Image 1 (cartoon, helix red, strand yellow):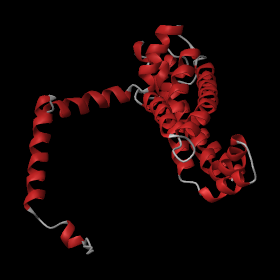
Image 2 (tube, one colour):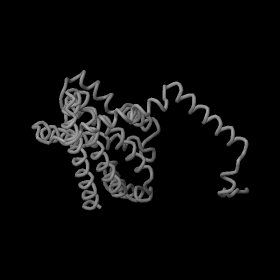
Image 3 (tube, helix red, strand yellow):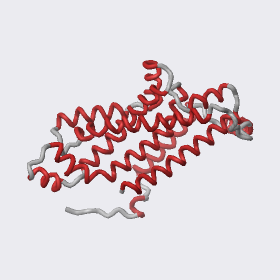
Image 4 (cartoon, one colour):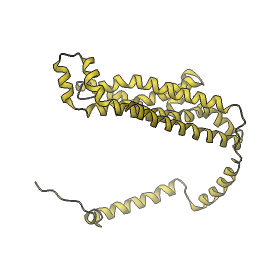
Length: 261
């Protein structure tokens, strides 16, 4: 069996297939730009409009009383949706792991994960708003849905990558299935699991400001209302506060990883 070593020269060698692929890509780019109505004239006009639009952001307005309650509600939505989503994702991930479950069980669990990952949180938020009305509950439902898909997928893959020797050793002691999970699986995936949950909480913190635009609670609703009023200085204040909230979440995420590892 022979193996060919790919070098820089051979990788960038101008073959007929690469040339045809490059030409096809350029043709498609031109076609897509023409179909979507992209032009330099629109870009030039957009730069001017954008400059005037951004000029209205200064100075930012932090005096409105709606900012703090909206930020606190976004924080609560992110925390609760991460908690509920993780609690639902753990059993689904175990059922989706092919090294622990029979094939028919893993397929059902993986279909649930795929379904949860198929829709953007805003789409789920719109459906949830129609189902339960405006407010934080719709946002929690939407982000819980997204958390199940994210944590469930990554955790199931982490479980499939664990060493089976530890599992076999636990089974040899006569442990039950839950004992195998507790002493054979959890110790091997705990560090990665903490990282998954920390990242998803940080992601939900950002998404909680986005789902609020469609009425699912949080600071996003306040941001959308400010845009509708053309109160761009207040918009700037909200955006700066959102950035600050996300930065705090990033710092806490790093701290949590250090504590539990």
